[in-house]
Image (cartoon, rainbow, N blue to C red; front, side):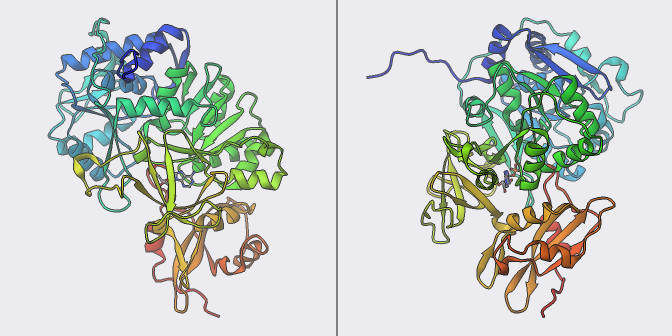
Length: 542
Ligand code: AMP
């Protein structure tokens, strides 16, 4: 017997239709590349998205064709999120921080037919345009007044002119909810980047899950400022979730320094933000140096790499901003877990609460997870056994675009490449990326733990722990440290700092100081580069 309920495909356009009808007056505020602070309502967003869909259709964009973007977080990017996916084409968010050659490789692999870009990236697009033979139209995301006087790009189109030329009569087509909606490439630290191709269904389900109280806990009363870029896994789903719940959105554009962010947080009464730890470091430094406070922001989502407990403490104890530690990946749209207390855990002693919050959290409904040993057998959830984290769910990829790299799944589970423990309450904790694991005398040492401790030292700005070759133990931890400006600390002081905080044999054998730790295109430490840099490093053997 079948249920007697309406069949409505889960389409991204329905999020926008809802936002227009039920939250039409809600605002989207954007600090733009042009320098101004732009305001529009959800009603205007809906209208402009329809007109942009019409404009793209007139340009000849067909069903399933890929439309690339090279853009900051802003209202025009948001309009493209809805226009492109809504019309049945595929939004391909490119990461402008990638090397131009890699960028061109990705756009060609994805077969992008249109490329829309913020003016910041005009020189970059000029440099790669000749290598993008499949792109039929280049669109500068600005108005006529800000178009470049000259451009090496032939027939460069102006976004606002296209918008003006399009009528507002476009009707969102209805189609199968499994239709592809957007595309995001993995960072490609090993081999070529691979494309994760999301569907309307996976995106809408992910949006419901992201908004739940025990995930990002979003509501119509929130003012959300995604620092996480819209080119990094759909800004963790926030552009969709804001429409679903009717939350005000604030976009920082290219201005991600501490002062610009703090000014926006205060000026727009932001309640929730989200980003990787490296961004928050700049913000905290600025707020501390200028003795400022956050008067409305009450929580921030930190993920993308492990949030050092020292950063959580600074936010929570210093500024009353609750940190929501979350884990995910491009292949998961991206949300997998969020660290939210269960009943009673709020009342635990501070040290126990801190220990829970350092974990990456509990699976959000829709994501199932397990850890397995080298033999593929499931390991217990005792908070001690660690193994490879496997996940499955309706917003996890089944394969990469064009079958690149073969089938990633093992028995229907996606192997994340992360090494994790799960405690009896279901809180998962990442101890390492499997390729970053340090194997000393056959035993694993978790580099994230070692980094977190170093980051709690007042003189340390950033720390990476990598495996260095050791004649007896094969590998031993080498701590690579970037000091805070003007701060001093010695190797001996840092090694002594580990005393009593960790099993003695985990203590790093040596410390090297560097001017900068290389960061990847999404703000994560590139430990593979450090491993290359220190591949001939000789540890003290005494
Ligand atoms: P990406 O697909 O580029 O977003 O990278 C996903 C990877 O980032 C994951 O597989 C983890 O290794 C890492 N990651 C994401 N969130 C966290 C977190 N909260 N703690 C530790 N690692 C994380």
